Amino acid sequence: MNLVTPRPGSDASPTNQQCRDEILGEAWRELIGHITGFRRTALLLAATELGLLQLLTERSASAAAVSESVGVSIRAADIFLKALTAIGLLSLEDGQYRLKASFRALFEPGPQSVVPNIMLYKTEVEVWFRMSGIMRGTDSSPIHYSRELFDSRLRLYSGIEMLNRLHAERVLQEIEPQVTSATRILDMGGGEGYYAGRILALNQNANVTILDLEGGFEACRERHEHLIEAGRLVLEVGDARTYSTVRGYDLVMMHELLEMFDAEEKGQIVASAMAALRPGGWLVITKFRLSDDGLDPASSALFSMRMWMKFREAYLESDSETEDLVKQHPISDLRRINSSKTIIVAQKAG
Ligand SMILES: C[S@@+](CC[C@H](N)C(=O)[O-])C[C@H]1O[C@@H](n2cnc3c(N)ncnc32)[C@H](O)[C@@H]1O
Image (cartoon, rainbow, N blue to C red; front, side, top):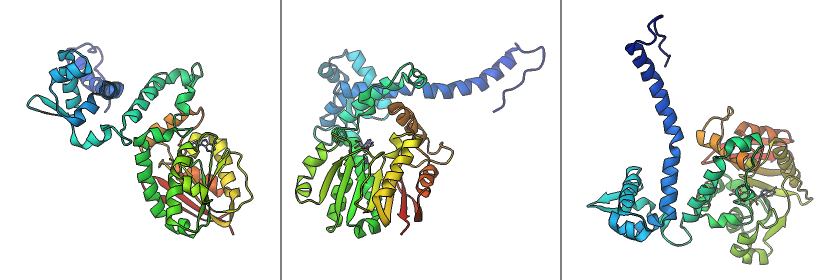
């Protein structure tokens, strides 16, 4: 909307002032929408930290009962519960609050609980509120934020694992021909072992090597002890940027790996992957979708910022940028599949 230009000499007239307020007020309301997003974040964090959401999975409770069990005043409990209900987390019936049914399983005790996952965002909020200093280099991201999913820690966060499993199943459907025809498979940065386990179940002729950093295999060792003992799963410690092998794999995969690196390192990783393939072998890269202009979807533009905040100079490259990295090598085929993530499938020239 254009700013209305007031008539000369009548700037301060109540009508012009009102016109300007209407227009600027609309823009200001939009900014308020952005700047107050933290309120919902804080409500959800506090409700989790106080154990309220966990409590309200089991039973409904009044403000008085909540006041007693979480140790806040009745007035605080009343206002808090109403705010949580207003943003759609709780239901209210006859003065009794309950966590909405769709969220309950996520807060029940057990391995599927997203409570640790929610608390992970508390760290992120603290780091992101220092964004201007971190970008200027007068402050830095703490190492525990950068490495929050390294060293087998992914298994602590069932929310991420759940979505990863859903994505992986869709990806596996799309790359079924490559998976079922391969016998030697390399998963770069796949330390948690989900893809490896599923592929070894789908293809009895396959052996999988996972390349990951030191400390990245603990969960995988626990989950796939029998596959390791049988020699079908090999865990190799190494750095994807400098990895080199003479093995000649039929299929090399990397799922959500390139995003953690700067432009030069992304090129090094793709080069390592291509070099690890036998002629005619397949490279599969999965990543969050991102348009050429880096804007669409907005969630990926924000995710790219997240990568930069974690690993200085890292970013989520656009889908075309990933393709361009692959095209720098001799290939005979390249396809982009739009699934829940972008899947780039390329065949090394024979
Ligand atoms: C974001 S997770 C990706 C996990 C999994 N591939 C997936 O799709 O969910 C990052 C994984 O890459 C590993 N990683 C990070 N830097 C690496 C490097 N330079 N070389 C090999 N693996 C690396 C981490 O240890 C971790 O297991």
